Length: 160
Image (cartoon, rainbow, N blue to C red; front, side, top):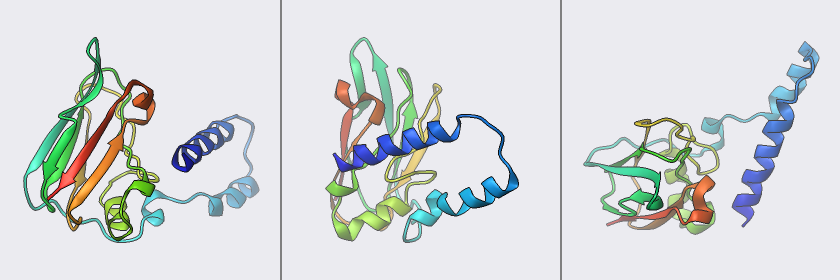
């Protein structure tokens, strides 16, 4: 639940920051130290994809909201290409509390353009986001689509 609270607080902050008004150079300089880029927030170095790239479709239609397939079995070094097909926006979000401590930093480092374990929102058909499984330990990594968790959009990655 803490993960969702952070996401909600961050969203509120972003909306408030976009509220308008003029910005002076002094305002900009004061705000700069508080803003942290995703790359700076992640410890570790992204590992390259050295194996198979698996494809997962992100869908929202008359059958419901889902990842297809919802369970992915892969090996360390593989990659997963998530493809937004319909019913977006969709994302891929790992709750850091569900990831083992010895894998968390590497997973976060392997997530390009991510924030706090969440991929960017994919908005248009055929938009993709690829996750490297390089240097990840064997185990299960559950994930969700943040906007559609209430509709049951979740999946699980199993690294063998």
